[in-house]
Image (cartoon, rainbow, N blue to C red; front, side):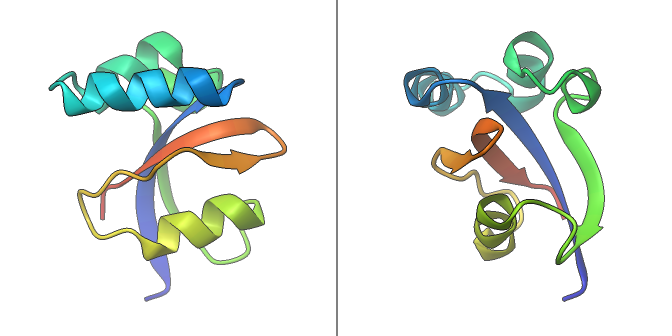
Length: 91
């Protein structure tokens, strides 16, 4: 498996990430929340879509979590130097 496709929502605090996870579990669309709440403006306006990437292209904690997900699965909050990511595996 060389490349995977993910979307993410990036926020500053773990509490924000957990609140967003609750919203997703309650049925809100990942892409809509990303547009509204993600501090990563570039991917945020694309609904969090990061496109395809391979190993070594993302920060380690993000990469480790992303490659463990199944397609369609959403991660628990993942801490990196940028903040807290909620990652959704798209492909």
